[in-house]
Image (cartoon, rainbow, N blue to C red; front, top):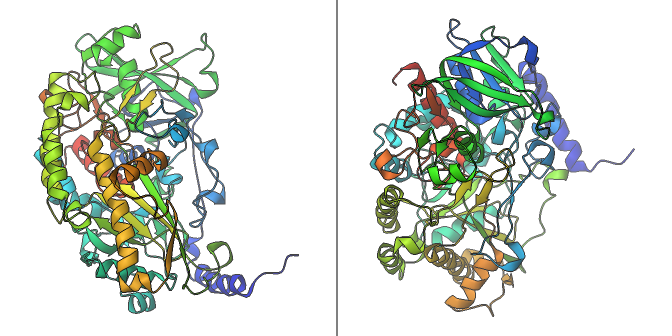
Length: 610
């Protein structure tokens, strides 16, 4: 038997009595699924997608025992402990993902033009495979949604749903004392998802934090109360009592799996939504996942007595809409699909958080403690710097905003954009340009653990816009995804300024200087705007799996797909509840916001107000 290190033994000794003290919290996954032949012929509500949003909506709708709910999920249950392991964020999840690769990204370097896409195909969706980073955007992020014509969707309108979905586990008092960890309990409620801060941190994280303070970033009590800018401690979606992932499946579905009015069918693909001659939803057409390559495979129709809710995510929700005849008419005609509703915004407005990195060596740093595999240290950051453009580029933020406002939008938008979509983008541009001038709206994220010499700069408010469209030669193949990463040069300028900012603070602030930073990649020889722009394009990744916006919640005259009640324009009885409705991706990892959107969406369906 291999000899265990003292650190591992100590950590196990700490965990065993903790688990024993909470026997009801032992990590366990329970599931119940039905066979196709056991489905009812009709349900009040059919939810297409058993991912993060779909399970929240299913839970809330089935609270009424008089209402029948069916969830249809393409993926299966992952019942392994791997899904629960809070430090196993780099596990191979390809078995639980769709197989999608983007088209060539002309805004990136030759070596990384085709981007592998991470899109969950498992019960629980993205919340089952993500990194569990659990922050929210600033108030400005959601207030911008409201300003785009969506009353009730500002930060104050969403805060009750953040609270309804999430519980904050009070951070360890020793951690709070040693690292000056602060939080705002009033931003949380008593919801199913457990949010916590890792009880042990790398010692050097304090120097990083202080270095950002010396650079002029403003520490916040919390990023969860609308002040997600500057510096703050962020939670993870981890139950600190069992050290396990807290996600949609084990918190929203498993506890209520035995409700008689709730059925979950796994391993089935929904092909289309069906309508009558009055464009009223009548149901869905679906087929088994293992028969999707058989053109002669039988399909099954299930009737919806009230509504169909699409919760299939920003890639597959627009695909299902388009296959059902709802989308840009010109594209549907190319695919030989009869046009039910000409809705050009379906599949447009794609946004994700692109990533650029730098690599350093710290010549004066103390030897690091054992890595997470051998000890109690975190593999994922709890500390985050969220940089407003005004803080990151004080001498150039105004010119960046001016350049953005002066652009001819036809040169930076997809050729398919209609006048309505262009009008919507102009409204988005007005809001984003104003945000560039604020200290309360972040555009770049730098998460840090205190042990990682890799600096990751995440582009949180992209101005480039991508598309998700049907493959016109095979409408049942995976959708054609074009992020159009860095197609807009303003995105490149902001990324360039983030590289300059990191380089500047590492060489000028006393706390970072005490570590003896040595830039290894790209190296100090890469200087000047043109060289840094080339570095941005050659190094960037298009996606952090925060895809959003492809069925945008905006007025129809602005290119929107759903109204503020999440109802699809032009038909009756069809709603969308997932990240595709977000008109602007928030400057945060999307997990927390998705729970709030789903909780609010469920209330809208039920006709309930908070």
